[in-house]
Image (cartoon, rainbow over all chains, first blue to last red; front, top):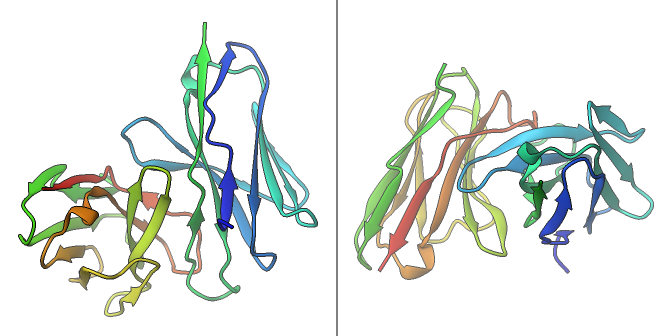
Length: 113
Length: 113
């Protein structure tokens, strides 16, 4: 089983739609969680961290379910500029030790007119 | 600030040739990382340097060596390139090894024939 699993997509949605991605992780001791965004042929960039209580940043909402070991990302009112690959990232390292992030393979989102 | 820079952007090598990928950051970060990204695999950590003067192996270190030249620069060397090392290589940095937000360079696309 992969350490971090994501549906590769692509998810094709019209502008204005709401779309959700899920990600599962295998290491129950994982400490922290993130969503990164990667545009085609570009570097990954941090989109948001994922906190236990859930967190929101504008149109983006991230949720964590430790019991089921999954993370979700909800994008409301999709824009054309949201088209990208979304990487689920988990830090399985013990607190206070060097972070060795584990990346999922990404879910591709294509927002269309 | 340029952030994280990488050279070269593209490179074609023949099997058995050697080369060094360069990475530099101007954010005064202590920790630096080298990843490779392959289709269907996600980013995988090759080596990292938690602080100047230290380097450690990541998930896929075989066939690579690294040098943390100073606080700013972290290079990745392929001594004898193999077709299996065809990939996109990303350098990243973070303020501390325990601080998980990593900032990525634009990547180097390497083709080994």
